[in-house]
Amino acid sequence: MSWGIYEPNAGYLLARSACQAVVEAFQSEGGEYKISSVLGGDLEQDIKSGLPLADGAKVIADQYIFACGPWMGKLFPEIIGSKIRSTKQDVFFFGTPAGDNRFSDETLPTWADHGDTFIYGIPGNQGRGFKIADDTRGPEFDPDNGERLVSMDGLKKIRDYVGFRFPAMKSAPLLETRVCQYENTPDGHFIIDRHPHAKNVWLLGGGSGHGFKHGPAVGEMVADLVIRGGDADPLFRLTRFRK
Image (cartoon, rainbow, N blue to C red; front, side, top):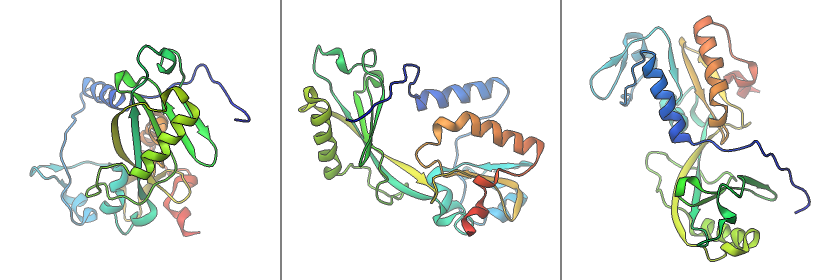
């Protein structure tokens, strides 16, 4: 290691808890939170008469926002299509040595190792184990039909890394694995733009592995665009892909 940066005020987000808190706040203000799925078809036509849901209901609104992660390309194949590429990202949780508090979140900060690859780790995780993952973009992945099994090559790479950086965890037990997905744009920037054929429809996507942490700022910006009108920053518009 040739250099390092320590930020004592940094941390990590608990995504599930954060989403639950947002839903609770939304409902406390009178919002209705509904879990359903949109029927496939011509969304441009459907929106004109109400968006049909799988349970038979319809969503009728003055403005629509589609923020559908890795499914954006499937929902809008002509507009989004391959502009958002879903990749498979393996995540591993390891047990730490009994009685050794060096790997607890009270002692060890979250960390990221930028080298030939980008590997990061989060200790503690509310008792789930020491989370470690390779942030390098993985192979293309179908979020509907992709197999949710980590690769053995990926596991070996992470085990070798753990043994190198944290020798006391060389033989740490594997407690849990997860297969997540990133939804990547070619330039790594978000897509925030109006649908070119439906001006009351906003398309949001392309988190590219760093979307969640920007959620509050993106949400505030999009809410302002929807309520006050206007156009998104050129950095996020779909037209940038024509170049």
